[in-house]
Amino acid sequence: MAGARQAQQWLLTLLPAFPVLLLVLRLWQLSRQDMSTMLLLVQYVSPLGLLSALLIALVWAFPLVVLTFGVLGRLLRLSAPDRFDPERSLLASGTARTPGWVLTGAVALGALTWQLRFLPTLLMLGLWLLALRTRYLHPDQPTRILLVSVALPLAAAVLAYTALGPAIWSALRQDELATAALLAVPPAAAVLLTGPIPGWSAPVLTHGLAYAVAAVLPLVMGAVFLRVPVLPTAAVELAPAGAADAEAGTGADPTPADRTGPEVVLGALITVTDTSTIVLDRAAGVRFLPNGRVRSQVLCPEAARVPYSVVSVHGWPVEETVLDWMMPRRPVADPDVRCDGRLPAAR
Image 1 (cartoon, rainbow, N blue to C red):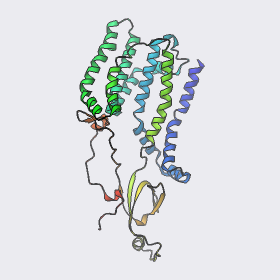
Image 2 (tube, rainbow, N blue to C red):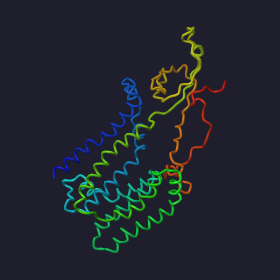
Image 3 (cartoon, one colour):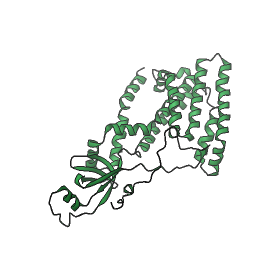
Image 4 (tube, helix red, strand yellow):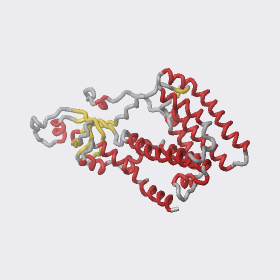
């Protein structure tokens, strides 16, 4: 009894620390391991902006965690009911306390946020959950079990291969074996795990897979989030130092060392104070640009991600999500030359 409760207490204690650790590691990486730069970023970077970037980048992880552990827990409960003890096993405890609407919501969220090439895996997990739940709740209804455990997965596999067949063949021709496997294997595998497995192997298999997922998933999430931009990229156009002093009316005659020409500073915009515009340049150096020299600023859009795969399903690229298709596309416009580090044409 104390084992599962103690594990839950530790999990609830450490779980909120994981996002904080990711945010700190992201700032540490952004500062190129310079403590002074990191402290400056901590001072000015918005926590809400960091959390928003974390949520958008890792929203796909919630359905993966809920569905994976849901399948493993229900497989353990059906295969080895004598070893399914919510008071001693954290996997069993989470399965017993997770309501059905959470699983339904996880499937819906995964359908919106997972890339097309992962949707067959989502279909497989959803069919497994439905079949295992039906076998557990209605063991005395063989017709219902047959429909949910055999007929429904077979029908889903036929429909999936009808829709994905050309894409699978295209992936094989392009030597994209990983994409072909992600599209071809899950529909067939959905028929395999719709019932119990041998009871002697169920505890070892389910707990072993649960521990493996729990160990690997944080590393994957960290690797994904460390590539997410958390500061806006801006191009700041600076006027010549002498011209800026003349416009300010200081009357000071700059020395030759102080005379600098116009330039464009490209980097991550940290903040704007009363005296300076603070920018983290491409070399991870912090530059304090006098506001008197700032002629203009422009927000630079994030560079488009180079697609890994050329495979598409009826015109839908396998690396895009449903949300990518639902949301309006940004109109194509000529890029600002300042975002390339070049000065605009003479005014």
